[in-house]
Image 1: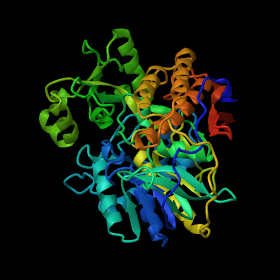
Image 2: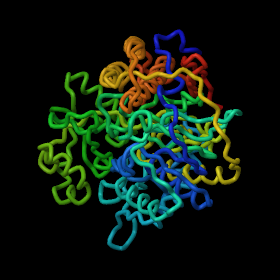
Image 3: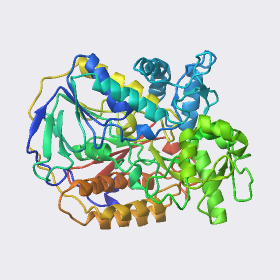
Image 4: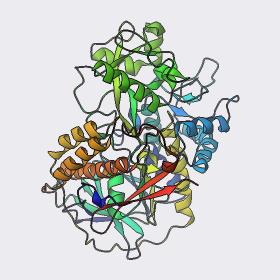
Amino acid sequence: MNTERMDLPALPRRLAAAEPGWTETTDVVVVGSGVAGLTAALHLREQGLHVTVVTKVNIDDGSTRWAQGGIAAVLDPLDTPEAHAFDTEIAGVGLCDPRAVRVLVEEGPARVRELMRLGAAFDRHPDGSLMLTREGGHRADRIVHAGGDATGAEVQRALHEAVHRDPWIRLVEHALVLDLLRTPNGRACGITLHVLGEGTDDGVGAILARAVVLATGGMGQVYSSTTNPSVSTGDGVALALRAGATVTDVEFVQFHPTSFMTANVTSVQRPLISEALRGEGAHLVDESGKRFMVGQHELAELAPRDVVAKGIHRVLRAAGADHVYLDARHLGKDFLEQRFPTIVASTRSAGVDPATELIPVAPAAHYASGGVRTDLHGRSSIDGLYACGEVACTGVHGANRLASNSLLEGLVFARRIAEDIARDLPAQADPVAAKADSWVIPATARPDLQRAMTRGAGVLRSADSLAATAAELTRLGGERSRPHNAAWESTNLLTVASALVAAATTRLETRGCHWREDYPTAADEWRGHLLDAIDSRGRLAQTFEEMG
């Protein structure tokens, strides 16, 4: 398969004006400061390595702190890794790598306990036992949470404090990663980056390293409505593609069924209404008050997220509406305020009291199941380049991520990456001079790109909608801009959007969170993975790899 025949833009193989004006050296550079990045940094330090962590904003401003639900792990003696694996693979609709799933469910409990030893305080019953709850797709209570619905914030706090206790972890904040540096034999040996707030020229530098770990998070900002923060612009996936790495499963973007919809929330990032609220008994209802998920799936509102998002979308299309409702009134004011303080504060600040009113909700882009293709040790197709967390595709999630497996995946594979790096870390080598095409598109292209992706490559897709989106991406890709932070981000969004549209166009079926209106069922011949890469001319190329 070759997407050159599609109406998609040529893509830059390097970001414009990204020549480094200064250079630093470290053993390993970790790009990203969420749970995956900080956990990798801490485990690398256990191996005796010097680490530099580069983060786009402040250390606490990534996606991790927004995670409300919790971490899924087998911590109940009555639960089993086999049961967790079963639920994960059912949610993944035939595309999970069973080996990666086994790693996740078997090593996950130990990683969560390590997190507790670092100081993460999860909610407990009066007798000291962990409070465990259930979310969509799980058939057991196996979700640990903190502060009711503030798990991400607590995990980020604990990791942040642990990192700051180690003087050999250097933190570079407000720095946008640009491109990968490689040795003459093709091995990753560092990154170029721009320290925000500096001048365009003297702010660009390089960090040379013996290995590079991408933990840059997701790409939700490719859509005009997402639960992701504004920094989630697909930087890691775009960097990997420009460097020649393979990415996969990028068509599988999970839309969280319940983002908060109100006229008072106007930004691209929409507040998340945690799945745990449904896990505790809240119901989805239409405008007439009917529970429309009953009868659509045995788990009703707690079906896997793709099922619930599709159920909501059908109701919205039939009614010509932009939201349905979540009814939590029967849970009671005291319970809601104690168990879900973040949600209650968020909705009340926008004029909706969940104790007495229905909460308006609709699907919003939430999580990229695909990303930089890695093996069971986090190794990408480029020697010395690793990836973990949402930027990576480890094979765990398949066509749809099971709720609360994301933080667990970051914890598990970050440790595996650190151990692999420590086993075989070469001496520092000098990078070769970059000669690839270099350009950026204007920052002003970002809203147009987001609207086009939402219209044509969002929850519902078809050949016509995807072709229209591809045409708009081509138009935007023909514009040029001077290099600066916002233009670099827009160019990253163009790169990941193009890969997503190419894969969504090629996959002629509906599977997991990829919903083709013109191919409404799953097809056995598509049980496999689309592998994307950028060729030497800046064109996207695809291959299809069948499942074994």
